[in-house]
Length: 194
Image 1: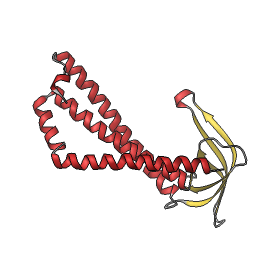
Image 2 (image 1 turned 90 degrees about the vertical axis):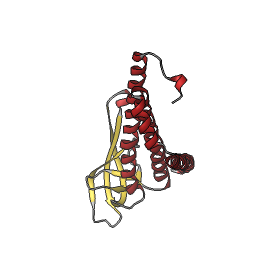
Image 3 (image 1 turned 60 degrees about the vertical axis):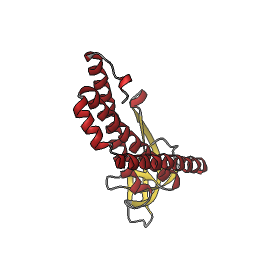
Image 4 (image 1 turned 30 degrees about the vertical axis):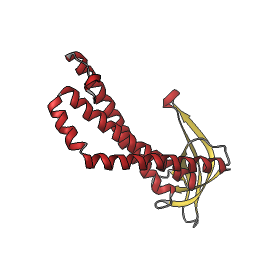
């Protein structure tokens, strides 16, 4: 953090430190929770876990309003080997009745789309979550540097050493390239889907 951008008054420093700490925790939590959720779904979209089969949509249910709105569809799942049949399988998102989807079903009966588009979308999301986590750590360490300059300087020196800085730049570059490529593949895949 540049010394010219730090407020001179104590209340100003405290307010800026609290704001940066709040934003750092928010971005860090978003990065961790989002990354874990997307990584969990990745094992299904790549068919590494779950039961492969077809889901025929019977109906959808929408709950909540505004940003809290969530749609879940239910239908008939039949596994590829015809040993598993589930009349109450579910999948997130909205589909028309009668739509048949290639999916992986987890142990709880929830289904995940499989293929290039869902996998690429999850990979792009994981890359974005890593960037959010790094931003959260940066903002949190900046908050300590503002609130307690000596301790913040020690934390900054430990976290952002020259070697760690180079590694971090490489990680962020790889995440940005991964996000762009995966996002492009995901968009092309979604457009190609029937």
